[in-house]
Image (tube, rainbow, N blue to C red; front, side, top):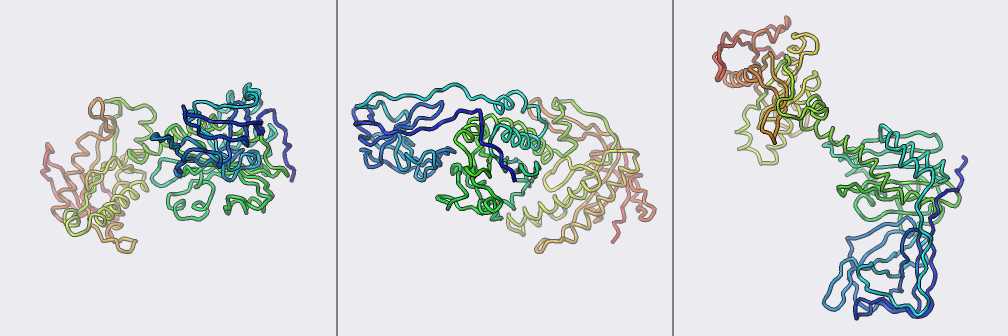
Length: 518
């Protein structure tokens, strides 16, 4: 396999040199450190940083185990609080305990945060600064001018991989993990490989990530939990990290690996990883290019994540049809349409008794099974759950072609709900009973409520009748009661209940019991 060249237009550099003579770091009248072995690190576009041997620090340091930062050149920095007299300065010093090659000259040395030091005293000449300038090159231009137009995170990941290779970065594998706000999907993981120019997109569940060693013992988990980034040469014995993925990549010819955080504006830490198959791995310029562009890359993915999360949350809390309408702009009070639909109202029977007999956790588990069974059958027959009301479900089956089709879908869903609740598949689940009412008619499907708190629902007599028919079915002990003409199944003809006077319904309603079959 050919490897891409190690050429890049980025000029990122790191240089470490010894400082001659005595160097002191002061905070007011206090000497924080004094050494004739201090070193200075020059890094492109950053001010020079003075590092002191740990033994030459003259004040007390208190470890700060929960705070770390990552640099792809120097590694993961651990921090400590600084005690100066009665004053405690939090996270005032850092140290690279296992520095990467570019920072090995300051391995184990201590550096002070700018706000912790009021001044340095140097016996020798002052410090020089590397030329600054601005990061430039084809990748930067592309990120600023063209990348925003890509329509999906899949295409963005592929394009970033190809763009880096074209810019001389020896990337053999690029992956991006973006966390989701979704009840079932933990995140989306995009993996691009240069050899076949193919992208794999995965959507791992919460259960998978919590229980699978491929994630729990992986750089993705390490970085996303705020433990710092990772840089590891794979063609040598690991110095600090030993994750399974590194052995797999090494077997595929990778020589270098880096995982770095992609923080979003809300504080969530996503992860970007790269592997190289170049004999010398990534150069300082390679990593400098990606590291300095990571904030832009993160924002591009955040745009996609915001849209995806908004869709997922609206689908979860409102349903797919309603969520799509809200996301499409129907957000003002009064927005909506008059539609024809079959309305299904399903109430859990014996809920008060179950709550009294079961523990709170067991009761909630049974209630969730009732909701899930009902919602699954509604969705299967192209309906949509509009809301969970206490221990009841309101669902809608809009007319897609003709009235009879919508009614038939509602009745089929009702039969399956009854059977699904009565014969649970899971061990330990209790048989449950329900009362379902179904009516058909014109309803207003849209936004109602106050100016600041809206609800997207259905308003109309059919919704009220469906709820009252459910109440009547509960009283007579029959699981499915429908309004006139809702059920016209010749194989399961309904049984007339006559005209019923229902609470808060203006006139009598012709009602029928539906045969639920075996």
